[in-house]
Length: 302
View 1 (cartoon, helix red, strand yellow):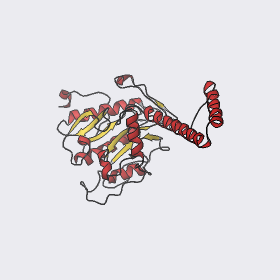
View 2 (view 1 turned 60 degrees about the vertical axis):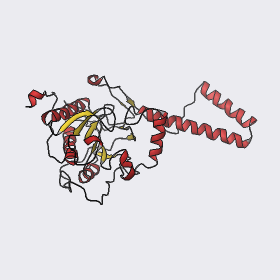
View 3 (view 1 turned 120 degrees about the vertical axis):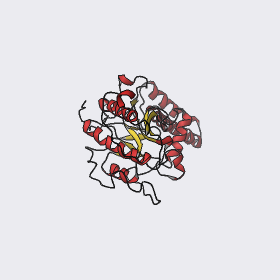
View 4 (view 1 turned 90 degrees about the vertical axis):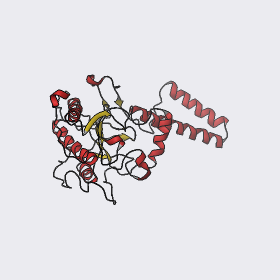
């Protein structure tokens, strides 16, 4: 159950998890916004259209036509990028794309700087009491992240074995502690596996602690600001673009961050420690996650 480490800057992640064929397989790609390939008939038609426009229309109208054509191409590429990220919290429609385009205007410009929280919060300190030694530095550069809802990891693909082990471990945690946790469909993503606190002390979407993404094996979770600060500094994740508080709490909490996909067993160990901190923020209890590959039944958990 060990995947080879990879830090190469691949341009796409192709997921082929036979164990989860109920979820659509997705190829994550992003087109350069200003990229345009014209070959054969497309090139000939473009040249002919430019010639006719310049020769038969007034200069002002010609400029308007050219600007409209450029805007159409930009929007078409951007809309394609939105759809290529696969299903998520926003419907994969043009109306959904327009909503995300509007929200981009308010997105965080720097997702790596921790949030500054002035108000009193509970618990007052994080799971690890502001110590940075609990988290090692992540190996290699950060992966490339794209999108808002959905937000996905484009390269440094996570290991399929680690992804399956994480799902199993979260499910077994809920089986062992049915009064504290439950497993369900993500409230934020509207799909995918998520761990919930039954009696949350901090407001998230129905007490959601963490959810995992089938398409790229990354995850989103809610963390105490103290713990989130260390996660950001050590390179294990980044803040969600909309996690800035205020009126944007209707979309995600200010404490909402993305954590990158585990590439091997040692990284999965670290991510389980981060999820333990997330659970502490949401439900106020301390617990441990065992990495397991076999699912428990309720009788076995007793």
